[in-house]
Length: 371
Image 1 (cartoon, helix red, strand yellow):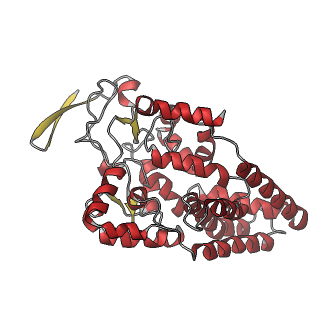
Image 2 (cartoon, rainbow, N blue to C red):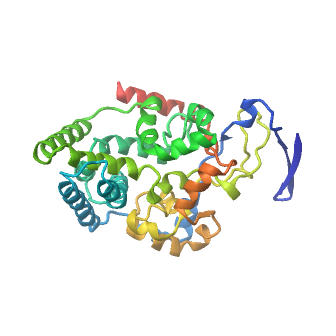
Image 3 (cartoon, rainbow, N blue to C red):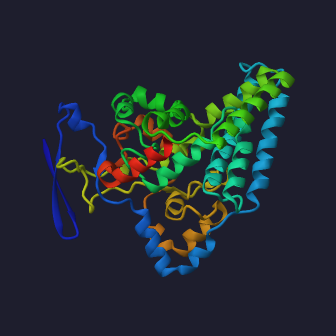
């Protein structure tokens, strides 16, 4: 085993790199910590220095018109392809280029709506999210909001953050084939994983989401045939697969490449100290933000979840000294490629928190609210 010394703030930390033939439980482990996630502290620091940032919060009125245009575009393409086989090159090309790009934009419009950033009243955001859901083909919007709010409130939490891969996923999908499968079928992992980790309360919004979606699908199939619905489904699958815009799923929170840091020897359930905890949120400032409501400004978004997408670049400009030093992703396509084919990048590369001790009462309250 190789010993590595790392110096931080005039202190020297010693690490032990496990041998290649070390037991699997030594080689494979998440970045465990009990330290708080960084966004709350940075938000307080930014507001203390730049109180005018608080004025950036609030909903963006023009977003709804863009969403309306994307939904209309998807229905027009579905109508155009109603007599085209899903196996035809034209069908697959349009589903990848237009359909996947549009449905990824709708996924992320629902993300904006989950933060109530399109309308003043939360109910109006929920209803409009059901409308934005229509070209996705399956009911999704009502469940996304509560799970995504847990991701923000308890980022990295072992029990409540369903954005994290499970240990089962990490064990079986951290090889080359597994990572290719994970990147190709990301949409299924993100859709199905939450149901196995944390259960949420079923509400009338969920029921409305299901009824409206099934009714819309039924009318479309009766009027235009199954190929039109197949276009929606294929668009959603490709939007969460090997598509440039899908790179944000991995880029946002996986600790990749140069952002990896040596792991401390596991002790008392903690592998990473406060000084050596790797950055766990990464921003991307490239051109694909134009198609994805600036979701690449992800550090900014987690710091201020109630600032709409149009004002995130302004936040970064105001508080540039807080964001410029942070690790950045330069290419979503590059992230997908490096994640799959670079051995150091695996599903283990996520920061996890031992949330049971910190949030036990909140978990009990969550269970009581759902009962």
